[in-house]
Length: 110
Image 1 (cartoon, rainbow, N blue to C red):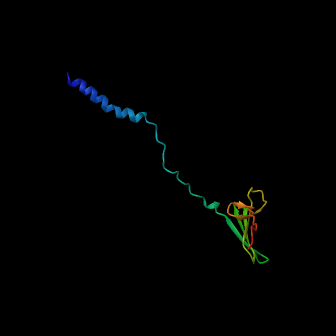
Image 2 (cartoon, rainbow, N blue to C red):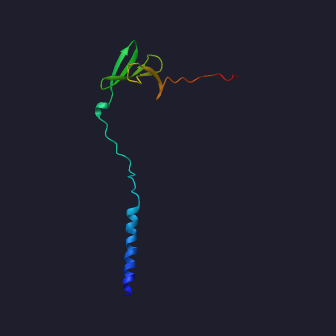
Image 3 (spheres, rainbow, N blue to C red):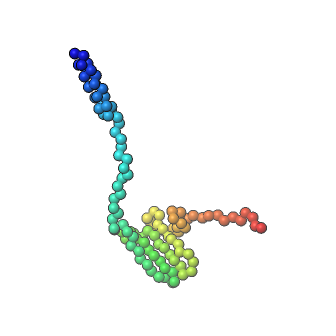
């Protein structure tokens, strides 16, 4: 009879890890989300024209003009973008900075 309480104690102690595992909160999936492949139809259609020595590249997606790159005969190329999609183009000075105007002040001369 002495072995019966020992068996009961061992069974109770053996089942404690099973109870502890069920009471723990579930861990969310830590893997990064998979990326969906991009459709080929989203790639822009580029039309290149020459006008008075300037090269004009028009970028369209699904027939909608959204960006124009103008490369003058002399000078730096510049972009015109349509930020709202309403057909009004504004100059884009740098990536993500339409209408950026950096002040140039003379602090002192030597």
